[in-house]
Image (cartoon, rainbow, N blue to C red; front, side, top):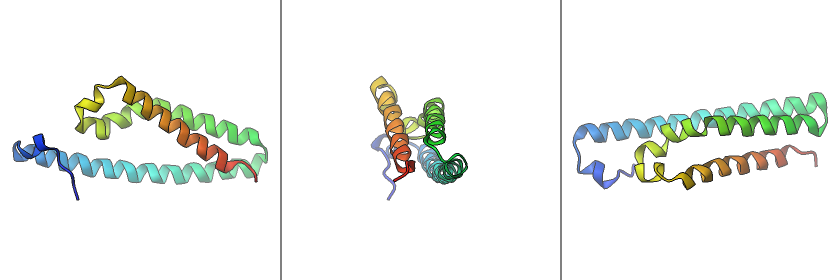
Amino acid sequence: MLLVPQHVLKGHYTFRALYNALTLFRGLLLLLSILALRRFLLLSQILWNVFNNSLAVVVVFFLCCWQHLQHSSLAQLLGAFVLNPAIASGRRRVLVVRYNHLVHDLLLFLLLLPR
């Protein structure tokens, strides 16, 4: 079920339509990020098979971290931060999002290490 904030519900129909469009757009971004993650895992597996050492995994890990840090502000702008100005005004929240991206990449890195 779509959770619409109270200030949007009390507003004009145009605001509700805009909110629904942004929510659908966020869903599309999520789907694209899942597809990008699958492509990243395939690329890292190919690199691991080609080089067969931990250097390739370290390179992919740092490239992925750099990509997250470069595009995290864009993702925040197009995601939930558009719909919640109170969160967008908090500088600490931006750092938490970037930290969560790095933790996510670290977990991927650990999964790619040989057993």
